[in-house]
Length: 392
Ligand SMILES: [Fe+2]
Image (cartoon, rainbow, N blue to C red):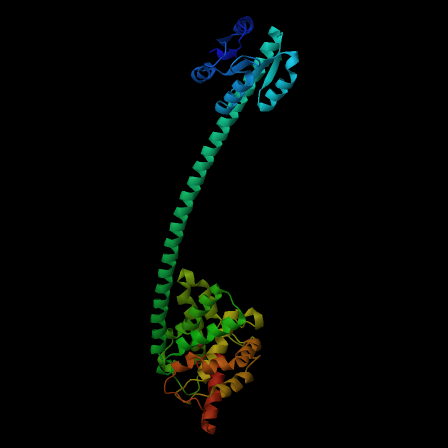
């Protein structure tokens, strides 16, 4: 094992030699210095791990040496050699950072113990600094890694957001195509899907539904009657009374729509809303005969909007009703066919439906109902058909 080097600074040669003998026997390597003006050069040039310095010396005293070492080599301990008369200076030295002091005359045992303690303390100090440095390096590496990962994640998030946006655009395009397919079945329902979207979204907003629900509602509102593409035109557009068998066939459109839409993995909720859009609040609807709050909320919204838009749109057998007349008709089926709380919401906010843009989606359409006895009969019939699933 390599010997540890100790620098002894004392102007008295006898002291230097005595200490040197003890330390050499203790297996240390010793450098001796008489001090003086050259001491600072010696302190600079030699590779030592401990300084033992006398206090009282001509030219450069022990406190100056201590100050220099502490300032330039903070982890090298300094032991002060002192006499009993130098107590105040010794206290001063300790305050300045001396590791310990040795009172002359010095015994070999006390010297070696004190040196061993000083070097052990130095070792701990260096080890501690090394750990601190390693810790700092590790922390820096970790912070860099976290920063790098965060940057990668942010990049991925942007990519995902863009992909989601593209997917949403594609969904809207697909839904638009499907809506046109639905409306192609019946020229009198032209614009119905778009108006349904606006009416439903407004009702949803008034009910305070979440953003996710709004998206589902928007798609379901446009696609609610998609299943009609599976129903024969002759039945769908029939004005005369439908047979029971024909009613049953029309009723199938909820399930056909649900089946088509459920094939799209992101539209599972939408398919359930479509499935139940002809449930009646009193449980007399289809396909599940669900009642009240057991009917999905978004399906109940669609049911109200569907009746409202149908009543305010032209049909082959009647002209559209004014909004007030439509509301009056809706009141008659509130609580039986329709959810009364949603109907109430529609009534309370009728101003919005008067003023807002969805009415502009019905160009050249009379807003005033010029009802005759015959038309009234047809209207009542259409409301009755709705209960079984026919469009108004
Ligand atoms: Fe329907």
